Length: 231
Image (cartoon, rainbow, N blue to C red; front, side, top):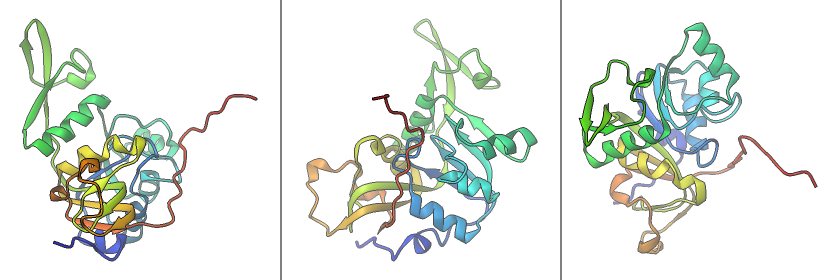
């Protein structure tokens, strides 16, 4: 099956108001820049966004926040976005902060078809308030539910027309987990090749998980916090 679509606007065309989206990437690395721009153009509203981070003020999910498109943000790190902070403190934005390992494992559980996981992270803290606690082998664990996302939107280095994906370096963090977990998975890639071109042993996400794919363009690949040593 050829899963190629013409571009990001076509790929996100059926995302409606109120949808729950997973957006891959780690910090600003490996984020689906083209699809985020298309969502901003589409002006879809009341979104719930599940992501490792909330972008920065003028890039990544920060563009959607500035456009008032996000109703709820589910993340593990949100410290680089002043507009996010303003919306949170003013009560405009719902926020669920999750330990990073729990965020990853809830994505994984969704991809594996598991309804929930047990984790020790968050026991005895605000994270655990109102959640079921079970005791295993002398230790308490929280019950955390698998995510339910209408769409997973990921970015890969290379992909083929069947949807097989290869990520590069840090972009291989949340993208593979989220690609498995969405009801519909959209992948944008830097290089799109014919089916059969990729080395099967190098594929990180099998095409069975991917429903739509397109070759992106004009990637900025911004660095979230540029730090260098003095000469």
